[in-house]
Length: 303
Image 1 (spheres, rainbow, N blue to C red):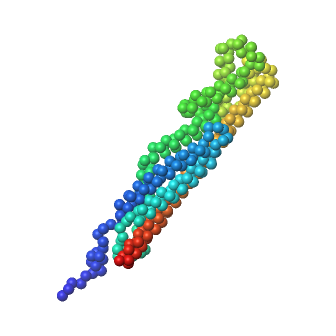
Image 2 (cartoon, one colour):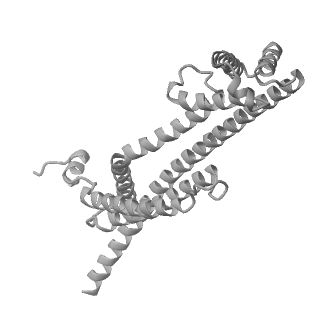
Image 3 (cartoon, helix red, strand yellow):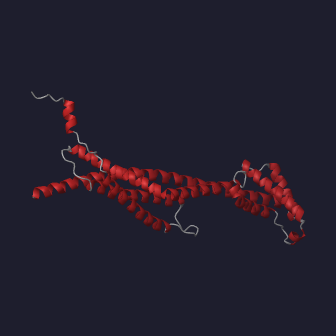
């Protein structure tokens, strides 16, 4: 009398002992994707340098450069993920006694895993370079913001030299003598004291955003005393210099805001490029696996 096998025992006896994941094709596809990514990134760097110019007004804007870089990242993800996913699907061994839908699912998973592994490898290799680029961008924004504040923030010690130079220029323009001969006859100690007071006023105005009426009056008196200008002309000079300071602050804030928007655009498009890369790798793996099965079937029928 034969023993009766339950449904669980039958299922266990027919279950495959091998895993459905073929790591060999996945690793091969990931390496191919990484290599192609490296080549395309070098090409993109060369093309990107053609958009940058040291001459004012002749190069691309920050926004244009960021958008162009992000679009190129989408192209890089499209090509490298497509090649890596296709190889991952085409190089895997044929699964026998597996439903067509299951084969399609496994192929897409293989493509996704190849893309994920390639992404991790690229991030690991280029992580330090990427961190350096992000750090340089953050330092540039900090420099702009600190320069706009004219040294109002005491914590911006790294930018103190640039801020002092900018402040000294504006202060020197305040005490520029109307008669150049008075420059040699001026008392150095008095000039230093007047310069220090004017510097303190400008720094305080940068912190508060405006110069009080009392400070403007005092600055006009200092300028009149040190340059020989009338009080009206001294007041006009003070107003002109303060307008230049305010204009410099506005331009610096606009540049910082433009850099911020460009960074946001770059980050969003970069994330989009990764999503596109995952989709392309999965679809390409399914295509490669299907073509491999069709080729093997055609060869088998030809025999």
